Amino acid sequence: MTISIDPQKTNNESLQPKGWLRYFSFSLDHKVIGIQYLVCGFLFYLIGGTLASAIRIELASPMSDFMPRDVYNQVLTLHGTIMIFLWIVPVVNGAFGNYLIPFYVGARDMAFPRLNAVAFWLIPPSGLMLVASYFVEGAAQAGWTAYPPLSITTPQSGQIIWILSVLLLGGSSIFGGINFIATIIKLRRPGLKLMQLPMYCWAMLGTSLLVVLSTPVLAGTLILLSFDIIANTGFFNPVLGGNVVVYQHLFWFYSHPAVYIMVLPAFGLVSEILPVHARKPLFGYTTMVFSIMGIVVLGLVVWAHHMFTSGTPPWMRLFFTIATAFIAVPTGIKFFNWVATLWGGKISINSAMLFSCGFIINFVFGGITGVALAQVPFDIHVHDTYFVVAHFHYIVYGGTVFIIFSSIYHWFPKVTGKMLNEKLGIFHFIITFIGFNLCFAPQHWLGLNGMPRRVAEYDPQFQFVNQISSLGALLMAISTIPFLINVFLSVRNGKKAGDNPWNALTPEWLTSSPPPVENWEGEAPLVEEPYGYGKKLSEQK
Image (cartoon, rainbow, N blue to C red; front, top):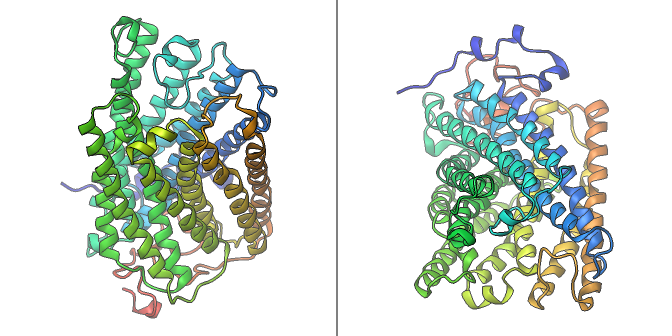
């Protein structure tokens, strides 16, 4: 079986809008779709960040004095859902995956360009629907996990809109996952072997397998939950004989792999950035490939470590403790490979490198607390406390979001042909790094001392630490300003980048910046050593 694309059919320039209009169109160009994902995701990031600021303002004092309790629950629900399903997942998968994967495999476009466009255009209406659910009577307030019986007994109209929105976003992810698998496996340039692909291809292949295997389980679970709400069935409603623990098993079968759906692409992106700015080959390519596949397999068998307090039997606790501890091994391999890549390199101190190094520091700390949470006695002590909140944010924000910013600084010259201002970029990193750690590091102490998460009121003894955390959140919010100024000024008047300002070797840099519609003017280059630093560019095939 072969899959081929006809450039004349998929990217007919005469039928596509020109200039900025193409970003508001049903474009079939994978590069345009990637930018659509990025800009759309960032807009929702601003909304989610605003909601996070409202949460931290409320928590600056121990009493519920900034917003009513039910509104606090609604804001909390919307914040978590937006940040996961409308910011991190679409950007690290859809934005960078769409822009880079065809370049990396030597293709003119994705395997299914129209399905690719459909996958993106499911996101804006789903996101608007999700945000609009906040303004209807009875907005969802069961958290991003939507646990029954709370999601069944609270006002239902907003919860149904929430479910429909997440179902559409899950469909978008499945379409994208199928497309990435087909593109990586079937559209590789003749002569390009799997073990010659850039690491981001392997990361996206593993991520897409997780998406295709686990997302349908979430979809089925939410459909059953909607039946309980609308048709008064008893799948998860304990009043009617339903089992709420079964919901947790089904939900976390998707939602723990979802952590790796967010993190694995970040692993791939940082593996592309570090060799370029350290001027060294990526250390341990083969071990990194197998560690990605190991994470994919183990990621599907660790979900119940979220459920150690839900009455799980001892044998199940033991199995999931061991499985969770084992998944730290392939993750640790990557950490050592990144450090070895940096070791002895000619490191450039720029925005992309700083955010990547910040990612490594934050993610290692989040990984250590993750191993601690895998231990049943400790997990029972800190379950549903702010220790879990801190751990989760060190993974998904200190990890993935730092790499999103690193990737923007790295590939901005490719997309626009302009350079971002490095002074503003470094300033952006410093404020973000300080603000992030000031916000979330103290929350470990809060959790260890018993402050529960997802509540607007707390013991006054925790007020000072919460105020420190809120100050960090304020710095994180402020850090967005220099970034936006940088992007706006650089797009208009930025220094011209040239085709390959980083002297990188991966295929996207071997064409013009910005690239032509069909990626290359002639035949796609065959890059057998994407990390062959130390060799002249002319030695690349």
